[in-house]
Image (tube, rainbow, N blue to C red; front, side, top):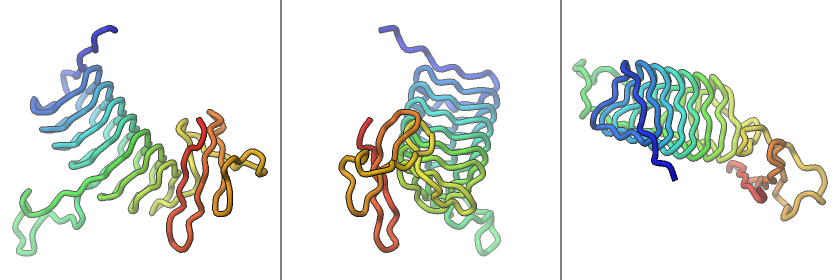
Length: 219
């Protein structure tokens, strides 16, 4: 096995010596990575992107140009963050306290966005903390996410709503026609297939106001 390659950091990038950058990662021009941030191996941080203090990213994440990942965000493995995406970190943002004094770090409690493995956030989307984006979900470009996104969900709009399901390849799932192709399906379920990989997914139809969920049943 060949040894891991060291991280590549562009001369104009501002990377704190207290940050941890995984082997094979690339930090491009004008990006900033703050103190105690942890990036796993194989990550890419694009031009002008901001990775806040203490943010944690798994392996093989891509954060595109000018994205703003404010602490205490948590990203799993293989997460894609598109250009100019913003993750917020304040329930009730104010520059000043009620008495007019400038807020300091001790005057507010940061809350983070969590993105699970394989999920993708489209260009210029805004994720309003403390939302959680489920594994392999896709947030469409320009969406504003104000509530948790289920795994494999495709959400779009302002505020973001689910408009479909996506597989691991990122393509929208297609409904399976006929019971013959739907092993394990039954009352309260619906079967879907990934057009790219052929994998089958089973959607559970929720009752009352609960959110539908989906799981992969064959690879």
